[in-house]
Length: 304
Image (tube, rainbow, N blue to C red; front, top):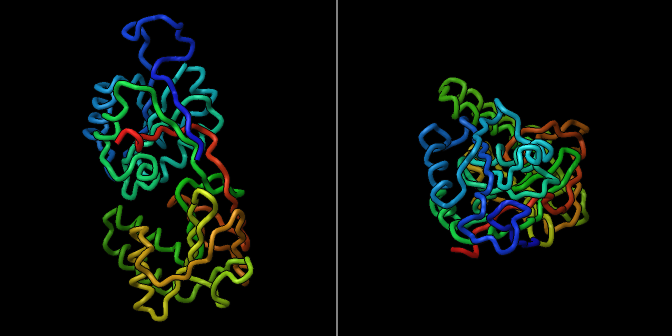
């Protein structure tokens, strides 16, 4: 993870000008009403917190109704800091769209799991993160990420029939009890009987494969774990863990750390695939490798 500093002021500030005369950074905010805590009141609080810290928002974009901004759009508007306030899926889209930009992206926790904000700031609320920004230059990092033919994964990949539990989560979000019950039953059956996924590396887990394999970016490699179950009851319990994206308590095998990793569905069927919690069209084989994020992300860990 490479670390740099971004000045608070706009590029081109002349040396010798008093700090009080320095122009305020130009800030855009991207939020998503479908994310866990993104109602109008919470977005207004984020805007107020940013203004209090010296980062007033000049434009708020509502994703996905409005596109995540690209480097060309951000440069044309002379944006210095792009703030994203949403879940892991929204963050994925915003950071991916901004890749290659010379500015900095501040990722705030506005969803359910908030896995990238925890990595960048610790498990702390928005108010504390933003308060840490006041009065000094921004510390930024370029963390390791997962790269594949689908683009980047900032927090992790889930592959295998267990990805069907994402449909159960969507039914929960919609508060559709009938659909939730039906999809939960289908998910248990598909997790148990759907085509398993294998890690193609040598000495990499069970010969009969796994209902779910997770891949997480680490500092020196991709950490892989294979999740299995022995009965339908186990699959139901594992499904609850999948719903919460909390796999640590489920029965699993460590599949090691890899710079490059290939997952295979030997039946030749496309594998279920979630990247940062969002569904993608998986193939019978998928390859992932360790890469570095291509835009600076603000970190406040050193300010805590």
